[in-house]
Every structure is written in C-alpha cells, then in structure tokens.
Length: 360
Image (cartoon, rainbow, N blue to C red; front, side, top):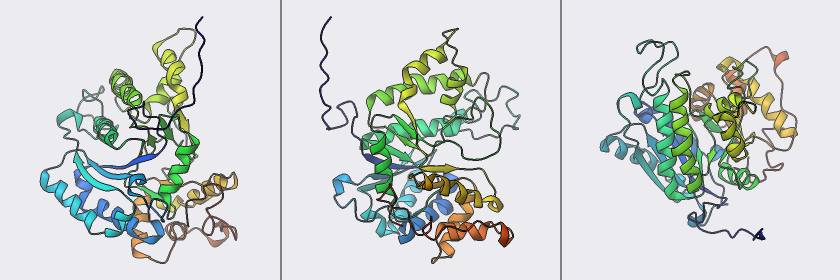
C-alpha cells in the first residue's frame, strides 16, 4: 500500500481547486420588475452608515469583494440603468472592488415564478417546475460569480444587515467553514414545515463559487437532480433540494439519495448568520428573540431575512436615526407589557461578541 503524506494546503488562486477562504463576490439576484424600486432602496440602505458593508477592514482593493446584480432577463438599457443606480451612491465603492449588472437571459419555461395554487400547467406543473425561474437564476448567478473566486454571498432584496461592517462579519463566517461548498442558515420560525424540507438552508447563503468542484456538483448533480425530483415535486426550490435528498436517503435500499448523502453532505455547513422567518410585520419581534438567543451563544446573526424586511427596508430609509431593531419595534407594536426590551448591552448596543468585525 502506497504511503500517503498529508501536505499542508497552500493558499493560492482559485484554480488550485478553489480552496481560497475569502469572500469574492456579493451577488444580488433580482427579477427585472424590481430594478426601479427595491434595488434602488437596497443600494440606498447600504450607503447609509448604519448598514454600510465595510468599515475600513477591506481597504485593499484586492481583498474587497465584487458586487454583482444578476437579473433574470434584462435589456442593455435596463442593465445600464442598474449601473446608474449604483453610481448614485459613491460611498459603496469603498466596500467593493467593482460592480457589474448581468442578465441571466432566462426565457420561456425557464423563467417561471408560479405559486403552488397556479393550475395553468395542470397538477404536474410546467416542464421545469413552478420554481424554474428562481432555480435557473441561482445557477446562472453562481456560474457568473465564479469569475471573482472564493465564496459568493447571495443576498436577496428582503435580506437586511443588522448593522454596519457586515462584509467583515461574513469573512469570519467563511473562516469558520473554509472547506464548505455551501454555508447556510436553517428556518428559524415556529410554524410547521414539511418533514422533507424542515432542515433546509435558505438560499441567502454563501457558496464556494470559485471552487471548480463545487461548480461541477452544481451543474452535474444539483440541477439535474432538481429536474428529476420535480416530476413528483413541481414546487421544489433549489434551496430545499438537498433537504429532500437527505430526507429520502435510505441506507437499506442504498438508493441514489443515500449515495449522494454519503458523498456530499459534509460540504453543506449550517451557520446561524442569517435569521430566516416568514412572519408578517406584526410578528417581527420574533427576529429579536431569535437574535438574542444566538447572541447569547456567541454567534450574533449578521442578516435578517423574510418578506417583512421589505417594509423594514423602506422604514429604515425614512427613519435615519433608528437602528433596525428599533424599526422592528415600530413595525410590530404589541401591548407594552408584551414587548421584550433588549438588555442594556444587548443587540442594539453590542455585536462585537465573537464576530468582532461587525461594527454596530
């Protein structure tokens, strides 16, 4: 038997199998409908010192990530307009090495965003599923982000940073999981999810786009298996797929899901850096309770994600003196006796516990 000597890994370029534990790209996937309002609001929010991506840690342009907006389908004029929106906020240039707006050129049944109760295609749904648009948008986003190496942070319009300095905080998350392909966060809500998807990690996550092995997994395993699964699950989304495979893995039958689980599950790492909730505006206090829970464990989350964050984003732009948690207090106004106020050194005053770089 040939002796194997474990040599220390040498940090280098991503063509050295992508083993570069750094943030190479921040990717914002959108549909063209959201260009004018929601994307402009997000840029304005990030340009605000309360939510600034960087706080001086990424002073060297070589260490700053690229910012990319990926649109499902956009004309040259729409892409130029996105670039003009970005240029309206020159403060963002201090946090990113560059900016680009890209069209994923999705068409036809690859660009479908349909609800579960949409019966236009019958019970089986369209050819690529009712979530074809988000699924193919994700694939193209990661493929385009690969050019920037390292990890890509995919952050949607309803995913807001808790405070400033979130790029450095994300770097710390990556440093905790340097060998992962996907670093994501579980659903934090109390409502019941199906047994097959309850352990899924939301798509607002980190992906090792610079690793060619991960990209091969995405193109040769992840996407083909989604297309296989949608025959029975027409509503399957890309971020729920791996949870379905894990649920269906059967060691006794040695089925395909089990074989995939054995090989790839260790490359999916969970980290509570994003709080994912589906609560309405009147339930946003739950974000604070979840935040405090993880903060007490030494891992304060970096982002809050969910539909209610659309209202929080707009409110934050209208209330320049308030923190995100103070805005949440106003969105969710139960009786005073029911409001759980932060501790004197709680989330609105301190976030430098272990993820020291997230400057509040």
